[in-house]
Image 1 (cartoon, rainbow, N blue to C red):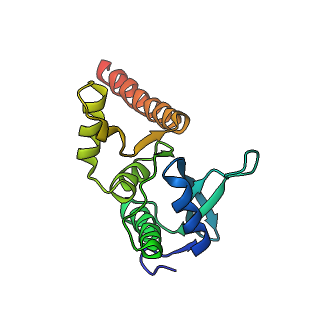
Image 2: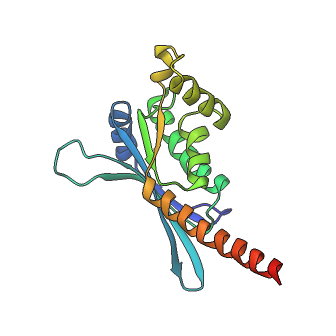
Length: 177
């Protein structure tokens, strides 16, 4: 349990070991369930998920976090605590995942890069630019990448555009008077 922000983090030694075995060669997902209302409070649910090693089986959540806040420090705390548990188990550096997939949440994106990848957001974007421009060394492609699912990002943009267009149209119509 965490006191500030209020939340519950759960993982086990066996799941951290499984993460260690799978993450180097496979995809790690971080999923956010959005807000769940419990009584008069909003609660946010997050999971670190890996694919099951046996085809046809459901993915496995290796760590869960239920919190009362949805912000970068809160999500980073969860990811860093799991990273620390895995490094303590193996007395070594954090196992960098090959690829992390998440939705388009800005809080998740800005938490994943420094927590999972152990680099600044600016250095990650610089690395991506170098690779996209074709001026890279092989070592840059060995580092992890972030992939964002497009649907949540698309829905967020669509909703923001509706709001902005309505306010622009209102602004235009009031200027005519």
